Image (cartoon, rainbow, N blue to C red; front, side, top):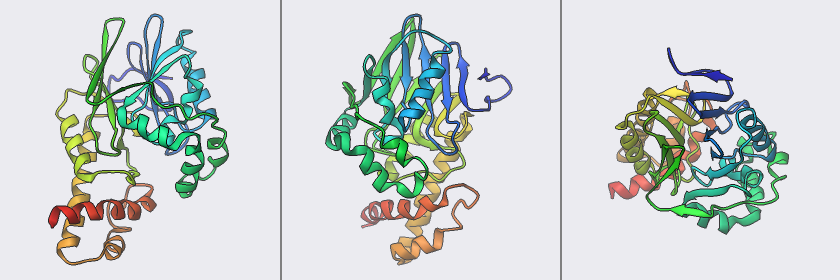
Length: 293
């Protein structure tokens, strides 16, 4: 376990203490989803539950190294399976908290969601399909909100703030203002092309403009290492650059296939997971066409 943020963000994977009782859980598996937890005197708040029962159990085991208290609240930052399939290992006794759209989406998918997820995302889930299909119950949130919700643990205020539609309709961030710590969910990927098949690009830009204005020292991204506020600016620049490139392609009369060909291998070529870019372009292309009409 790494601890503290003096001299820069801590490195490593697993549980990292960011402030007294505030932990990031950084995926030990390459490119996989992060989580987090806040420990109070007799309860724990968990942020996201990871992608498979095996991963969720590892998170639970790590939490047990710091407290014997049960998780009473489990916050889902959005509905994607790599952040919620572990819910069944925490709930019960934990109550799952999320934006109201997450409940609608998960109730629509029901227990078929693991198979749907594997079928839809098989090309980026290599090696994990078997673990994902071990999920027995897809647990939707039992506590929902539309704009913001504050949770109070031992005098600490934890802000759950809806910033979508952005990466998905129901994105929320978890902001500990006193500690200046922000859990972004999948608004932020570090040196990775984001997975944007459910995104609203203009919404992403608005969300990133919003959070970059906050007082933040430590950022826990949805994927990648613990970082600093500068990562928010980098991610905002990525989304703006993507919008600019595609607006230019539309203005030049290119087709979406031509835009894919033009940008593949050149747009943020130093970032990993470039195979995601074509699906991103196809997702946001009609959004930008509609804006320019």
